[in-house]
Length: 314
Image (cartoon, rainbow, N blue to C red):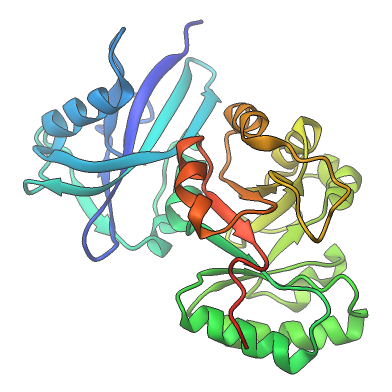
């Protein structure tokens, strides 16, 4: 069965809202919501196909777009490759040129709409930022909380509370305060035993590679409305993350780092190959910062994760 190549768009308005369209009842997966786009013709460049489809479907002319995520998905009756781009600028007023209903929704509200199964990673990618802050090790509690507060005030939207050398009761106390600091402003990801999941209902969870190996066969330990991520370093761990049903991963190390000087870096080329085989958002980690974000986007990553590069001076 030939895989159908489709170009799709996460179209953002100036207010940050995302445009989605409802599929006609007569279509494959009819009645569900989707991100606008259509088939890539043989020999056609993906960006050209996207521009053509969006003009035909919505009457808009794309002026700025970048790759967001590539997803391979197998339905019982067809196989698709979704080549998804984020469109950040366009001219014209979008309208359903083919009679399809359109709606502008906030990133957070995307989770309330029903999409085809292949679109779920796009929903995740559209809701996630391009930067993922991981807290530094060895800080005292006041410094840790002050830094999180300052980072969130500075626009960071995704924070992992990582403190590997902090003993459990202290970590849990800091986590309670961090949940409060992030509430309504940023998504907090905690680390620790899955037995703690019920104690922090507002937080997402970031599984270690050891937890992936131990628990992936049991499936997803969290309900769908809570974020689940995992640390991955190779194709085997990415496959386990897929099995566990995570929403996104970090892939590391891309370059040599101070925190893990002995770890062999993957490099950009190998990272690119690993991303191509994985249909979920990927944050690249290890010696990277805001300056590498566009390069990460170019190879299909969601963005970059980092400790020092994103941690504010406190």
